[in-house]
Image 1 (cartoon, rainbow, N blue to C red):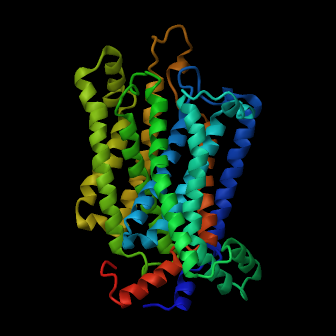
Image 2: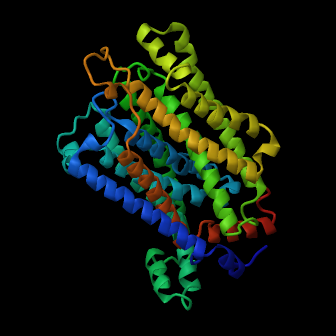
Image 3: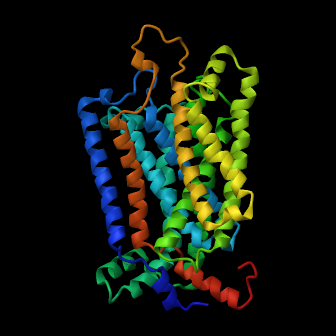
Length: 438
């Protein structure tokens, strides 16, 4: 059992070393390049992109869907773990909540990037139509951002009070801000009761909001009646895919932070085994909905749908479609079903495969369908028949991914990524044999 001083030494935020400074500077440089590309896009218009009348969403919306999916793990999954009081979650939940907040903030920003006229953003609120899924997206995303922030902030309050004392001599400036943010936390019984009730209420609220957000995103596609999207399967398909993308991102970030901050005593192979079981469950569920989405229609497809499926199975998009299906879904299942496959290093590799596969999966979902409109393509330029992102689109998209990583980087710099007070309390329970699950 480690005492409080040891926990603070191990888990308190630390200054970045040279590698951390280089990492942060690299992210900022990528963001600046992306901002410059976006300013040029605003000046010249969408002509600098390869989006045209058919591929009118392109990479920006696929990137938006990826961010929304990734945010799922830190809200719904963590909320369920909090409500069920699973103690093994303790070293993981705050990292998941940080990922969730960063992803959903960037989802909101990505939507604005996609708008050719962001100055008309206010019109989405002034002239909103309640029967439109886009209106509900505009409502639900800010709500989700607030709840994600509160789900991160409320549990961290006791740790902020500890950090106020810890940094009092070393960094008075940081100590002052930790004190302000700790809301005069003294650890009294009344404060603990209020905190626990608040966290429970937020957890109960964020589960339906998270499910609604994923479902609304699916409805944005399925209500267009386009071949490839006109499926009642889309809601569950998106939710299961979000679970996979979110857990994959969590595995990668947890592994990196464990290595960088030397947290092997707190994040053990046991935790990776648990995450591996969650990930394989998500992958199996997502595979089931993929079979529903692609295999069954292959036997009953209309002419238009047959053309779309052929482009995925053996046409233009076949290499990418099979790469994300096999590399990002089937291989992870085959590896994670075995205990050796759920070791930290193998989990890290699988996590990277899942995250990359999840991003490109959204690209396939968006792009392949947009290029199969209702009416045959006639009398249009050849370039309109195909789509691949322009340099501007790639620079801006990579910048949004860098911004998400920068948000995560800043938060892990100033917040304890593993709950200090809760770890201390659980150690006491373990010592007294009052919590055999630990």
